[in-house]
Image (cartoon, rainbow, N blue to C red; front, side, top):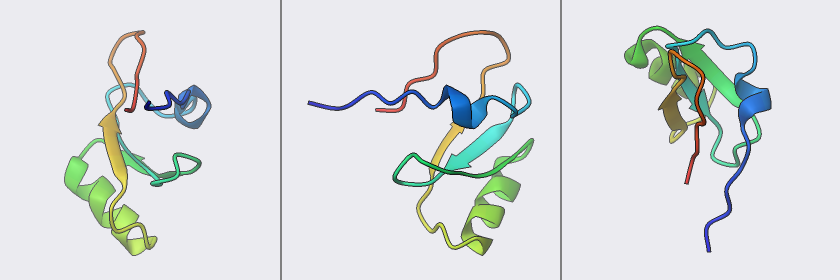
Length: 66
């Protein structure tokens, strides 16, 4: 069974509509920004080769990573 993890604390200070890269262990926010390509580049520069990538919703909602 897949575990649902609450990542709201990681995303608390990220602007709405931003792309985010999260570590594979879902414990660290690696990078965020308006452009996906920039976020992926910064994640790789920080040594995270295969981050979990998602976009913060523009409006209040629930974000689940499964």
